[in-house]
Image 1 (cartoon, rainbow, N blue to C red):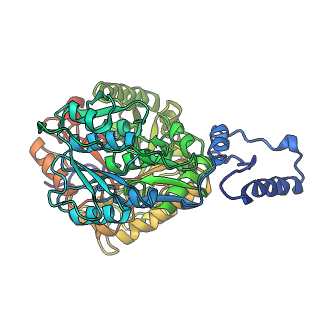
Image 2 (cartoon, rainbow, N blue to C red; image 1 turned 60 degrees about the vertical axis):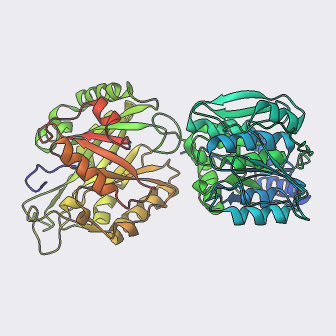
Length: 581
């Protein structure tokens, strides 16, 4: 598949609020003094008490969160509890110094949910023995000093009663067996989807005695004539002094259950970044430098989580469709091109207002197949590769801001998003990006880099498919991330176009960790469906999970052009950004 003869082509491409300490309470007696000192500093700068105003949407949530009394046994700053093997061992180590009783689940979601349901009611840690981690689970049981172990499913077949474990109980998977174990009557609640597993586990309460069971099948019963021994119930350990704990769909069931068994409150996030929406920000407001536990590596490091909280509190401007993250939370459908006319893409086929109406109609067609908001977007070519060297000799025409601003204004004022696309020729991506700093300081304008039109100092466009190295990409991403942070802007789309592996050299070295950027890989392949899928799958091989995927539909070069339904239901994974050329 070649793109050399195609027309020049290629979405994706804050307000700072005063945070005032109203009086901070924690397990340390220094916290209230810290709040007093903060107020004194404000007064020293000449502000009266009546002038100290916190108009943040998180004011009440922050006050409630920081007033929480937390035991000094827990880390004093945001901490991520790793659970790579979903064993729940790290959570058990953090929450329980010891425990007479432990629940261990074998392989299978049904087994984990049953173990979680029992563990929460019994206030006992819950571990997940998958077979390949049995030795680590056994070591954790020993550390806890457990005398009674309840096994669910095929867990730990090698476990034998010895001088340290006085009782090993094998659950039989039946309702009668559950009643014998606990002397309680559980009510079964069906979990319909995988996405709801952690949410439902986080909502378990000892008082309700709920037995969670997946809709697609339960624990295989192994009834016996023998009555099961009682599994002793313990008291909760938290003493109303546990930190707030957050979880997401990627968190481990056993880790979540262990935190609930301890007595901790679990706040469930649909996405492991509090900036996803205001509801999630309220869960953690004020906790950037205070105790907070996050279950699972999907939250990043503790330092990264703290920085996300800080950014979320400082930047309250929301993107079209809500929230402070580009993706997820919305998808985009864009027209690609240049205001000068149709030669460079669909965007220029009509004036700005008509282009907005067209993009809005396209987004509405896609909305029929998507639950998240689908918003209209423009990808506006800002610098266009040229066959002529030009006065500066860089084979790229850099259009002034005033030529682009009409289209940018039109789409953003209509509740959409704009991405500026760079085709640098011999120029440097960073130098060209800086030309559009004025537009990039807007909260709903992102940046796209098109390596197809990036050539060497002695080359001319269209003699080969261009390329850019990770080092140059990283220069731009660092500058854009700094610009975003310094101007208190919500996250920006940072789009990289690619249809051949050689276009992004050392792609594995591209920095995708900037909290200020949503890094998007835009697959530009055209042709028949088979060719497009082949390009899509090839580009995704070895790709960091930090990228969001984007797809392009061509009106004249696809055979045929995909429909909205095809694009959303047949392209896997579903693209976050779809552009039309």
